[in-house]
Length: 124
Image (cartoon, rainbow, N blue to C red; front, side, top):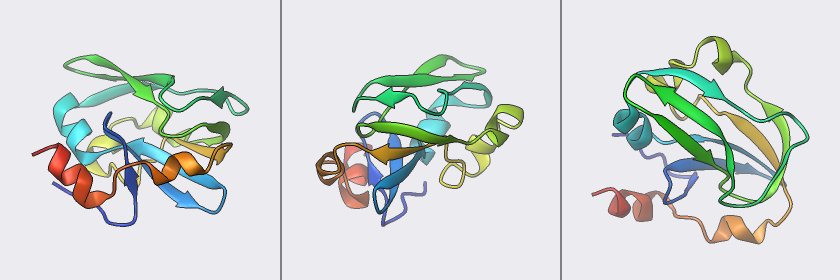
């Protein structure tokens, strides 16, 4: 199971890739394995403001429907619309299949997220 270094992780199995005052977010390899075949994603609109831990959408698989949670507080500046047509990409490339990009409103929150080793320890 892949857990790339350089990303930050939440206990809810989301990842973020920080770049300055923005971050792209998606779900981890562990999360997609638990879900099974992803068939549908509901994502927020650009301009939506999210608080850390707030639900920003849902992911539906053949097994279940699960909530997606914002890893940090921010404003949605971009949504990966390609996933609406091909949600199954989350299963094959979870770390390339980012779901949304956030402009960070409280950058200090990212420092409290898990690094790759901490996340690996969490899912053991």
